[in-house]
Image 1 (cartoon, helix red, strand yellow):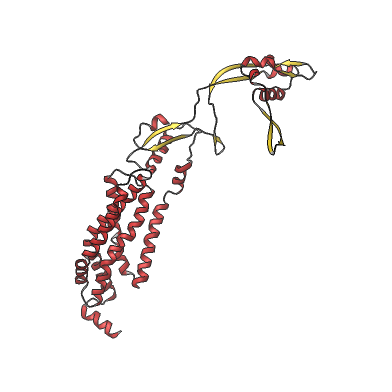
Image 2 (cartoon, rainbow, N blue to C red):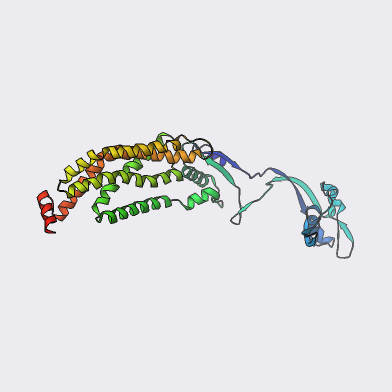
Amino acid sequence: MIAKANERPEVTRLNTTFNASSRQLKANVDRSKTEALGLSVPDVYAALQTLFGSLYVSQYNKYGRVWQVILQAEPDFREKPEDIQNIYVRQKEGKMVPLSSVVTTEYVTGPDLLPRFNGFMAAKITGDANTGFSSGQSISTMEEVANEVSPDGFTYSWAGQAYEEKKASGSSAIIFVFALIMVFLILAAQYEQWSLPVAVLTAVPFGIFGALVAVWLRGMENDVYFQIGLITLIGLSAKNAILIVEFAELKYNEGASAFDAAVDAARLRLRPILMTSLSFILGSMPLVLASGAGAAARHSIGTGIIGGMIAATSLALFFVPLFYFLVISMKERVSGAGGKEERVKVERNV
């Protein structure tokens, strides 16, 4: 699996702690001979475990501490396979029989450790996403390789950061949608109508487009830090649009046509939009130029925010007035109050 995955450009530094070529000493117990000599098979295994391994007996308190009692042979008597002949086990008739008469040893190869995951024997593989690829792409790559090379009866599962990312996959889109809904509802409550929030939120796609282009040009990943920047861009893009839409609505309520109100708002609010956007972009430059620990996270946030603000500022100045005009025109056609004289007449009647 590692060899196949190393051929893919999405992943790098794949490694595993599993080693199936470790030298081991295998002890074979002749059960038939054991029973013929009157020995108990559990007694044979218990003697091997106790003297060559270790056996927990009990514990006691002394000097204010808890001490464990571990039964084990001295190192000099368990360092060679031939030491088995020095171990005796009592048979049913009370005679002592050497273990070497029923136990043979041989050297084999096998894994030094057999870790388990979710109750199954498992081999752990670690790796990183290659430069220019996201962690989600590397996870998908490993899943494709695992499905391709795994024999029947084998499966895979994720742990650690990859597990959390798989578990939370898709939640960023839900958060983004809820953020848009919250901004829309707040604007609807502020303006006491549904049409103006639509015109304001039309600036958000331009900010997202600029952020994606900026990250793509720098060869960066669509990681969680970039997604945090996208949430921030919703408010920043809407802020520029509010400067235009609010002023256009003021002109429109004074009697100007929707077209004239949109044009005047774009012209008069140009300088405030440029000043606020430029100040924010310059203030975010340290994130893009950061170095040291955590620099990658700051690069991701800063690049997305600056790219989104540049696009939202340059494109929204042209398209937000257009969308405002389209929204108001549609509203006039639906409500039937489409002209200046008619709108003023309605206001006087109210």
